[in-house]
Image (cartoon, rainbow, N blue to C red; front, side, top):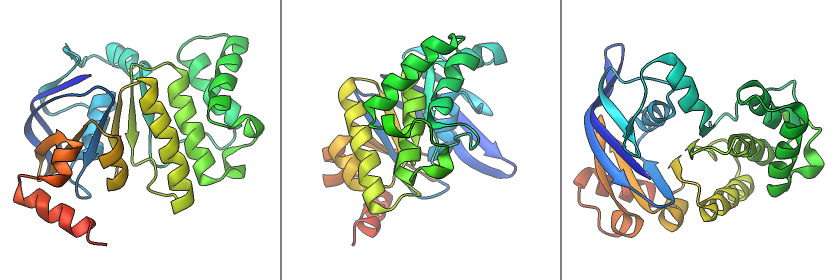
Length: 243
């Protein structure tokens, strides 16, 4: 997968989160985005998802510019699997209902076909016995697995995961990271915002450091963690890896 940003700027009021960013990266399976809070990681993910638009510049995914008109953006979103850190599951729907909803409402599948596809992906993530449960009846790790199952059920071109383990305890974090590692082996490209440095090092093809309004460094996982070139990245890694 290839991502190209040309002069991308995104402001929120007087705050410039991304400042004329030029960035190009290609990766086979997984790109991990790391950096300080408020540095622009989630903003970049929302831009790639077509959920937000830059104030200036353009973004190309696999050589194709992201569309500007709403109808084309809707098509782009329908081909993108997105998992947010807060799950964004519908509390009144069962796990099965949450996975089926985009298949029927967005992709136009009939209920029977949507149900079969949803059940297949829920079984893949060991959720078959929980299909009738609403989100409030599931653990945090189970809810996040349902969210990932919903994103994958639409057969997206790629997956965007925004801090998928941020609200989980260590055991549930390991559970979700195992699922993401399985997805990596499936060949579906993943762009992942994460604070799990060990996982990024083991599982990412490329790691990008986003801070101070831009992408300050991007390298293979081994080079990124073993030989960072920017002082600000060295300081960041020393601080978060200290313990």
